[in-house]
Image (cartoon, one colour):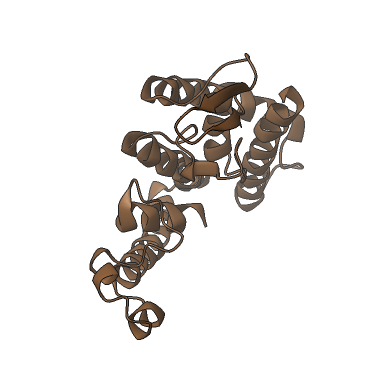
Length: 215
């Protein structure tokens, strides 16, 4: 688990370091290099990823995400006479860096659709914020490093245009009826939109926003 957590931080820091090197390539007319990769990597981990992930972890834990080293727990359901083993672990801390570093899969196979990882609408919104934070921040970084913040704003504007457009299209499409279900005669179920593949706790709109943000 510790090894996987390290890679989640390092992979995100590598992306930041490469972005900074690319910007230096645009601006460093008199410089012989584009910086030191290891310096940028360490700075990315220590000054950006660790502090933000720590704060996000506290919020996830406060909202009910699991954070323990106790291991799995076995529960016996007397009503249905079945026994279930629920895996546990440092879920909240893994979720924070997973979203911040856009690292993909989570602690459970259901990822953000699992209540142990993403328990409330607030954590769902926080996940979207974390996913978008570094790409958005790098547009301002670009503007500052090239000496013209308006260029960074222009990049952000283009990104925002495509993001808002695709979010609106996705939400509109997913709120519409599913032609296959309508053809099969399931007209009553169409009032809530197309719930196939959606997080039923948060609804179609939040699921669509999460989907567009993460992809």
